[in-house]
Amino acid sequence: MALPAFLDLKGYGHLLIDGALITLSVGVAAMMVALALGILGALARLSGNRFLRGAGATYTTVIRGIPELVLMLLVYYGGTVLLQWLLSLGGAEVRVDINAFMAGTLVVGFVYGAYATEIFRGAFLSVPKGQSEAGQAFGMSNRQVFLRIELPQAWRLAIPGLGNLWLTLLKATSITSVIGVTELARQADLIKAPTHMPFTVFFIACIIYLAMTAVSDLARIRAERWASSGFRRS
Amino acid sequence: MGGFDLTLIWTSLPDLFSGLVVTLQLTVLTVIGGILLSVPLGILRTSPNKFISGPIWAYTYFFRGTPMLIQLFLIYYGLAQFKAVRASGVWFILRDGYWCCLIAFTLNTAAYTIEIVAGALRNVPLGDIEAARALGMSPFAILRRIKFPIALRILFPAYTNEVVFILQSTSLASLVTVMDLTGAARVVIARTFAPYEMFITIGVIYLILTYLTLWGFRGIEGRLYRHLKSHREVVSEVPLLR
Image (tube, rainbow over all chains, first blue to last red; front, side, top):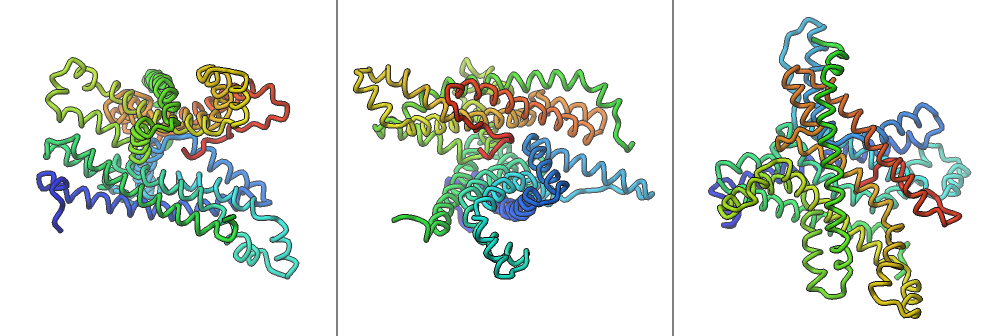
């Protein structure tokens, strides 16, 4: 694929495009993890079980109190040592290599799952209670009430928050560069020396991030409009 | 090796303490720099003149749309590309990781805070401003006596969150050779090869710092709103999304 001249960067420019694609993959995969954890976390925080509530609250409180970078390093390097130690207990002297892409995606997903938990919790609380009661009165099971009444409406209410979450998460994927995921920030870091143009390289990386956030922002506005159709006054 | 080595944590405490001092320094200086930049620029951001508010919008858009990590690298590694910068009198500053962090963090937080300040100023009730005008106050007096005090109460919860964000973001400094809390931990790890002891220890320290900051700001909030009888605490108990 021919790149425009300003993106050529002495022949290294295509690496930034490769990196941007990895950034998007990490972002999308981490967003899936965050959404799943967010729904589970919100259910835990709203459940009648004291231990589940406590676990949900601990998850969000602890994760949000620690920098992403520290969590990333803890899981990647600490995880490697821990696994190696556990395996050595079983007598196996092996070198463990945690897959950086997996570790990075999981950590980003785990961190933003804590924020998603609060978004979904707010959304579930905003679904009028009378509707769930009406569902129960119709003889629906708890599962049916959740899947047919609460979840579809919570999604709608969560969309503005989730749009914002995605924008922040996408930028946060840059932290995965410290454990060697060859996403956009890492690629820029790698080609800054051979090109002798560090400023140009990082600036173009910025432009690529801006393009991704700008497109995401447009999608977010459309999604919000879709989510509020039937509720908007106009 | 194996297990959880408590002695190791104990012996590394002096290193971690000096790192903690650097982290707190970076946080406080960034907060001050951010306020100095964002109050005037936040006011100008609300200007109806597009030639004034436009460039400020472009600045905040750039810094809010890109990762802080890249902004830091752009300054730390990027500026060396220009001969003029290397030859200039400020090169000894721009070569230093610590200063680059201060510059990058300040520019980053200012971008977010400008939008917080501008948003708060726009939400000052129009009736209050009209009343001040009717009393014959000058535009500056209105700004100082009406808009600022009201805007401060509006922006306070969002700004609290921003300070927590700065605190946590200073950990990026360790990537450009600065010996902050994270940097100090990484040095200890290079010596002892005990990553999870160290990262858990500094994780707990960051956790404590985060919640101390939140509680501290809740205390200030209580004072700011003490004349309002029905005030409900608005500074969140946990950090929110930026």
